[in-house]
Length: 283
Image (cartoon, rainbow, N blue to C red; front, side, top):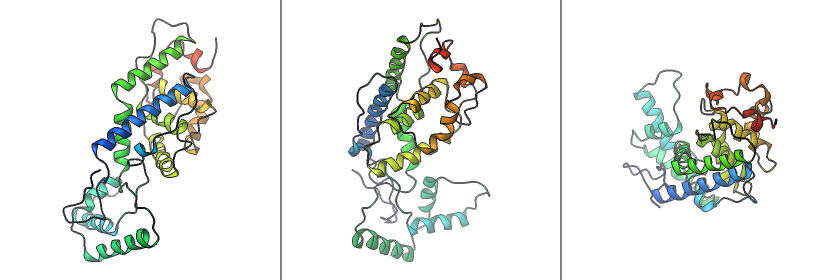
């Protein structure tokens, strides 16, 4: 594992400390494995639930640690030097970058040192392995892993097998548009994390809330899979899914359905002619 520190010697404000290519590859492979397992459960093509490999996920999916005094002070000084327009928010990682713009002051170093001694040497609390702003990297890894071409092909093959067993295929055939990486992430989070450590579950719950608040990514096949998932007794989507769940229960309205900002404006265009057979179980 690599450990990255800033040029000014600030070891408290670390970069993505344990994020090396090897750990990223292992985490991505584990996400893909869990996504296919969750999809198999939803489509009735799998067996018992599987548990995640915690060691592969832990370096990337943990709650961010405390924001050091050196970083907070650097952000304040950068904001005064480079004023930003009112109402323009910044993401945590952007603040992390801004905080590196100024060398740390001795009093901020002392404050961080004292906090480190108290929290990790006296109280013996474990040091978080994920730096402030890690969410940007976590979401990027999820997208990279779950939007991989080979995985998308495997997902479409599974959906096709499901449809062949239930639908007299219409000439427009099986789906050609694979579900979004976000859909696969929500499924694996709801269906494979029951036995995961609390720190991983908390991190993924936070990311799921971010995904559900993201606009314009869900098409027909995304909503269909999420509908199947929320009906599955072994899946727990959590409270953040409640609003979408209530809307999914009204699929019979289809064309007039408003799934909120996460649905694409043209989401109905992906729907096949046989949509009623797979949405409402109508003959």
